[in-house]
View 1: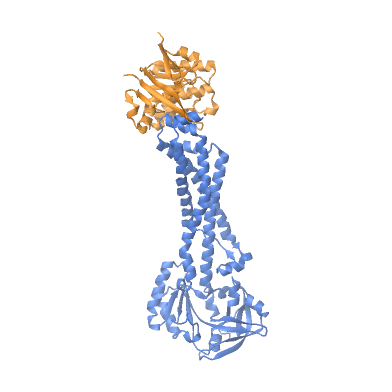
View 2: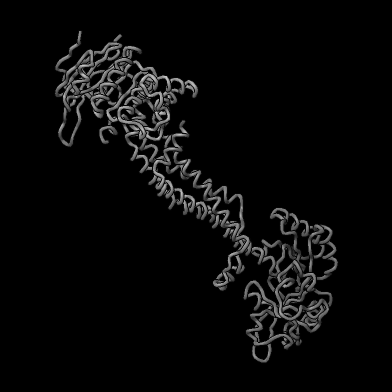
Length: 410
Length: 228
């Protein structure tokens, strides 16, 4: 009967109940949508970073990170590749690259650039260049003169497919070396900064440029997408163990992207703070509504005490009404929030208009929200628990009314 | 053992800086099964005395005892328990819970006592039959007339088999015909269930129905007459 009474009581004033339910619904939905959006943004940042020539695991010369020069390339690349294949799962993909700083120029412009020598076929599924939308044609594994440049760079250099560019860098012998390349394709990256940061040539072309044979400055490993953080750490440890004789450094992507790693570590706390901030706004509405309902029914609470209802039961009754309101609001908010999130997870949210800002944070132009069951549970738990907490005040008020006082006032 | 004993009870209210004596050292004894009217004009102290007897308010002096239990020795929880099991209340403005049906209003007090669902329903319906509302079980207060609501209130007061029923001007909001009918019913309940009735009133018709009339004025009992 208590449940029945609480249920009927919340519908005494349908308009007021509808207003507070809407507030809770919007609050919970906002929490879920916001969490999914932020997870999507962070996930996108991580994917972009991994896809942006980082990979899950990277093997480099111990001095390469502090001085990215061809003289800090890997020796015995084949031996390293063989050793890695022993410890990594079959699904793991490996590729070697030569990455060196240089200058690209034509008759109009010149710019500092990162020259990346790749095996184009093995980059498919490993980095953005393997699948990037492209005008013209991709370079082949043995292409000695072809070059791929980004659309933004092509625009800046006012050049196009079939035109020549001169690439200059420091060779393995310490001398400066230059070669002319013909533009085979112009790629479009997720971010404009990527289009301006890299030019791609084949590995043999890069070896010719730096006068080194069978060379590489890094070996990148891409694992299955569902590889957990714990599994990744284990693989990094295994790789370090197996590559000990080669005098190389092995990094997981978290080592290579410390800013994103730090952001990820703080992300859940940020989210919880956001949830509490949203709740605080909602909490005032809940207290106000319950308090109004309590003051409207002063006489009734007086009567209930007169007929022998103990204060504890009155508190439970008022809290029960709050619980119903909160549960209804949470259910509606979860449903609505999930609906909106699912819709945008399919269509994506195009932040193209803010692409400069999003690129600064390494985010994609299209954000795909990511639903996380934990976020939904936490959002509901925050609203339910804090909602009940703030309802204690009006409930205690109701329990403190004395029968004589309420009869006299009404 | 008397049903109710009030010995030298007094109650003083403070209104701003002024102290108003609502009840000044009043003594009253009511025996089990009596049908007593506390009569007097407004401000005579009837409701205050009724509240003190019902344990709804605490006296500033004196002692109230119900069925041998002195209120001064009881905690607020014990008093609530006493009101739940020993005392039934009927208020001037019915005070039914608007979202519950007539049957649920009556059964609610049994729910507070922890009575099972089936027994609650049986007892609530039986008492509603007794007060002539056998066809109004599922009506909400807003769907009942004033007289019918007051009958539900009487049924609610009676359903837990209390020793005493305290009724504060039960006919004040009713027309004379409905009031008379309610009084007849209360009289019948008094005779059938041997429940002690104490009600406050300044209605001549009610006083006529009472066996004993305790007249009050300015917070004092000025007369106490029992009809032969």
